[in-house]
Length: 215
Image (cartoon, rainbow, N blue to C red):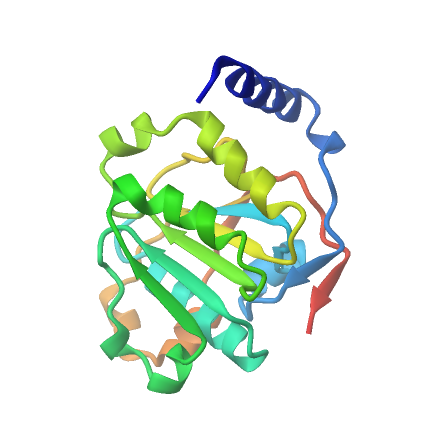
């Protein structure tokens, strides 16, 4: 990347940090069926980047992903999952729940490029980049300019972009939630729908306020 774009991205980062209220407000959001998210922000904002931090083992990241698949399946919204560690197990989900899913298996080194490509596909309504199992050294190598490139790519679209990380990583995230509580062993005796709707991701950052949700 040349010096000029890098300086521009750094300036955008500085302005976003100092003047968060000045960032663009989306008009719609994708409802998730998870009350902790939908009640707090109306859902996942379209044209924006949301980071979900999975800060504890067995904190419900797979349940959250499954609920996103269920919510988008109900509205026939096409979804792309960028799986950087080959962690997704399609055999554990009903076949119908996967009918609208594009599953991209790649490495951590190519995950951001794949995500950047997918955010430009007008057929998609949700792109999820799963970096939960990415080593810290790989996350630390990612320049902030790449995250701002993803943010700018998604802004003019009707697409929600979600990045799932093991710790706060995405400086350009307009929304940030954290799953920080591990499920007890007894929770695994419950059905998935009950566990999914009971997920309680905590809102850590909100730079955008959705005004209306997509039915």
